[in-house]
Image (cartoon, rainbow, N blue to C red):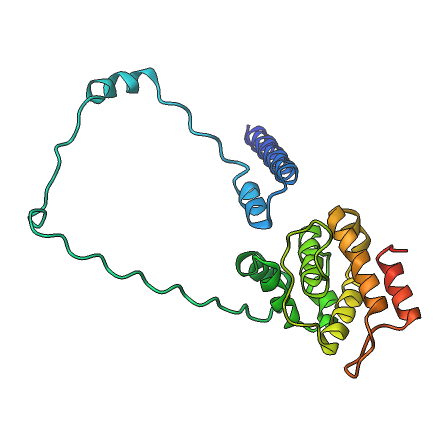
Length: 244
């Protein structure tokens, strides 16, 4: 009898494990289909086993029905008759904080999503990074949406707006050290694991911006700060991005 009970418990545990696995898989598929960010993806997966609350029963509806028209009397405090206090002056908006340098991809993504909303903020954040650290930060892969934002930030800083575009570019001219840094950032980003997959899921506008960036790097004058890539290096960079 005890062995039968143990067998029954094992079967129930196995069924429960299969059900949870199926729920987790369904939650992941829904999250991917909805194209949610990582935090929302995590919430959907963690709550995969939860069930929606059932609507109230007819019995509870009958109990609460006599109170549907009941309204609580208005409460007036002792100070309601006195003159209203003058409104306080609005607090000055807090100055934007500069994200700290990340030591992992999770720290980078947290700052990127919460504190880097515009191309200018994203470029300022990227500018603080050493390009050589990109393959170390993103050891597994680089999300296509983050890659889209990275290329968009470079395009905002280096390129004039495309025909018919209303995007505002940076006002200051591009310095030689910025040009050299941008070249190194593109080169080391291409070394991230599964970069070909990142390119496959990049937006069409990102691919177009990459082509314009390469044209800019080809035509930009070489200066005292490092100038532009030579022809072989630029050809290698184009090949890494699948560009002609």
